[in-house]
Image 1 (spheres, rainbow, N blue to C red):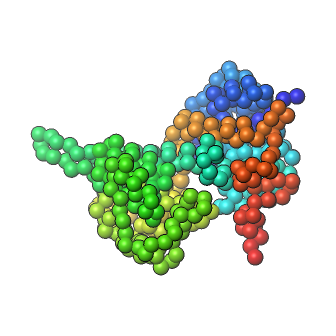
Image 2: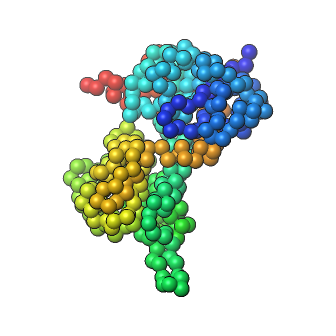
Image 3: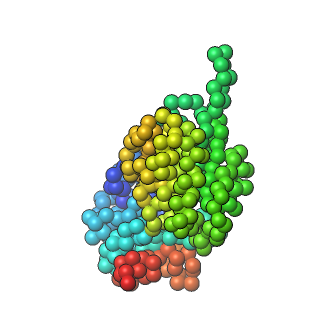
Length: 378
């Protein structure tokens, strides 16, 4: 009997993605899987049930989708959904293991082997499985578009019969995947763009996109960790960084902040002093709002005006582009499924560093050391 893959409808507030898109479902069906798609799972991503049926999926109830041998999701399963998961089954999707380790503990209690998309190692072979990067690029794009819509100014230089309009100044804080996409988008819109990152090595990437790289006089240090993420600065240097950024933030019409380290509170980059230094009507898009925010005045999930500056605390910008976001995320899940399934279904591989790196629960227990330490702090 073919193994089953379940695709439930996402129930988290504001989530519009679907874990698998019809194109990917077709490839899985061809490979021998039975794909169970909950009725209406793709509606918010503009993918109708009949599109899934046309490629061989079976439309089913929520309970049937969750009872599949392998469950794939976008958002981590909720407390109401975990009891529906097949005992001894497998889960592949976001799990928030470092931010909400209790979910992993509950999933482990079901005997489920869970692979977390957040924990996929940042190695070249796993780039096709890097869901965080895939979705971050969409977030960076949407952040700039939000800012351009709200900013009461043009982004580009305009020469008109009534005079010349100077381009807006856009500052990007953090030059990772989201930041680089934000730079490219702001440049396409004609803004004058600058960017800052504690990793000086990314300066060339920033400049290659036509932006200027902001350099602060902070004592040199090893500023990248083994996972490719920027390390958190020690307290004194972090405070110094915040102060040195004030004049650069103050002369910006738009600031997009993207500094986020998985499992940690977002580092403070934009102080209230910096917000006060900005002109009225300026805009801050804080992409780190889900972990508290890079701006001292950010309210996660809300848009507020402080000192005349609009601060957008968006926590799920990718949901604003559910079609392409679903397509990209689905491709990363496909890569995981291709590597860790065979003709009999889920196929764990303890010799594979992608499997061992992303595996959070197995055999009824939490097996990831970082997550275990969060559940049982010494």
